[in-house]
Image 1 (spheres, rainbow, N blue to C red):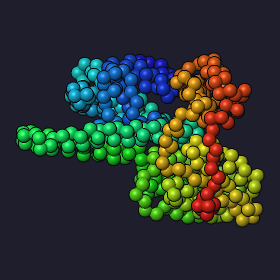
Image 2: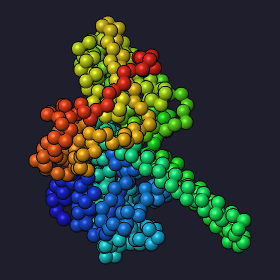
Image 3: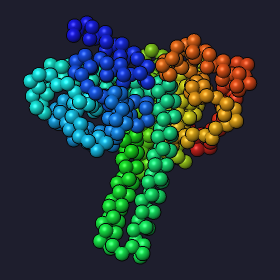
Image 4: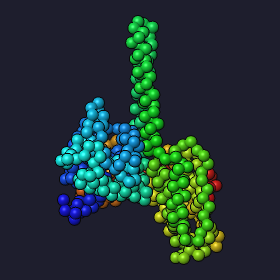
Length: 438
């Protein structure tokens, strides 16, 4: 494939809306290496971070935890490996590609190039090209996550709550089944003690495995608070280098809970934006700001972020900063406030809920909406315009307009604003703990 054509196809794939991205990437890579299915494990907004396309039996049965273990074993073994993967009880031939930032791509049943060398595929030209394409894709996806745009944060938060609810339901259902099996096999009415003992052992192992799956699933989607803050510390060094500002970073006390991935990335992005916003509000040279105090702490199931400087404390600039932060904070269900004191400096406070929201019971207003209309209503509530709704759902703007009109009609609303008001829940006021942080 001509290099110019390849670059254009990579660019087109990266511009594809998220729901259609796996299909577009698979089509691009198929020109280099035919395959039956594609799955990828990346840091994106899709909750479990596992997406795929192609052979339904492969995509449906491959598990994120299995891929995560595969990824951990692949570190240091080279960027491309030929691996036999157990999927749905059968061994499948796969190409495993690990990017520089740790994202995993798996191609099922690849049509290997003639003379491809065993397990080490680094010498095969198509595979080398796929490795470089995957590096570009994985880094782009990671950049979008680290940038923590409001659309990303809102989508990630929504999927996070749904994923944990589904996991909890699955755990409860399987636990009940296995516990009933144990009770049955322990019954004194059964005479085959040997068979009963073997079955009890098998069921007990299954219970342990199921419970460890819950722990593993949380580990996949969470980041330790201490590690998240250390990453922020290194980012702050780069941001404040050569600015002549002394920064005091106060780490959160030791805490058992981890931060959901979208909260960790969002909190770092918001902290960096708050710091940069304060420096910009201080003028091009930032000469009046000499000190900053940056603090994270946990209080009442919330991550509280405080940023304080000793700058000019311009009220107009503070209002601009507050508006810039608000959209991202509200996408995570949090609150932010900015208080400026002329001549003394500015305080930025942010409170983010750690636990993802649980899906609320369906209201009477939503009962009459079809599934696609519900999706449109959710995106309206998140502040999306028609164009971004179309990109998110992979439909045309005209189709979005039709669905919006239907949503308004069924909600009895005469405008988008009225519809959003009917869909929205009241936001709570800042708590004393939030005010105390500032």
